[in-house]
Length: 289
Image (cartoon, rainbow, N blue to C red; front, side):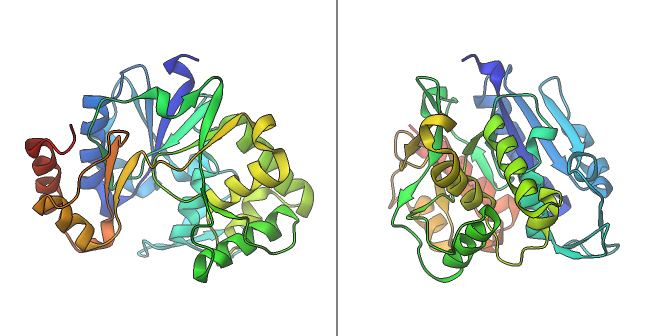
């Protein structure tokens, strides 16, 4: 497999513009130029992101990528509406957009990099591709309760299975999917419910696109046929809480050698300038190796 068969996809919007710019700078610094980077944002936000386009970076509108008809509700960042008049939550719409990534890219492998992540080391393809197989983030026994369990139950229903916890967690950062498997998932959902797949997903209240894909690979396709290998080592150092970011700042945690990027979740309450200082500190301290 050559680099040309992998593409990075980032779904963003106006409130994450500065974070997305930081991610783009890190991609340009650490990722080979023959790997395309696709930004997908709501049409009304296109002017904010136009300057990020380059020879390797493409910019598309959500409305042009997601099949069917979806419109963002005027003056409301977090709500969309579909052709049937169904209100769709913004975070659900972003997941629908990720599940539509095959309409945006031609690459065989899709790597999702969220706006609140940034690369800190040269891109290592071997972490995501091994002997013809693509990495599937999978942590056995993790996050089997609460809202995560609801996401598993919803995935099971969408896949035509009995509600259950699938035995592993598939949620993380720098997640990789195989294009042909994603297309199979879409076809599977459409055939089960006799409506376009995106309608079933968009009408979900509790939902995780990563759990849906992971469960489809394990329970419907099988990892061998899907050409995936399981991996528990996270290629992203995730700061889900403020204390995680503080641990980076005070040097009380170390960043593992396989880590490619850092996540500073956008709802930590840090402004982009403070976040930028964290990344600079990691670089200057040598934590990134």
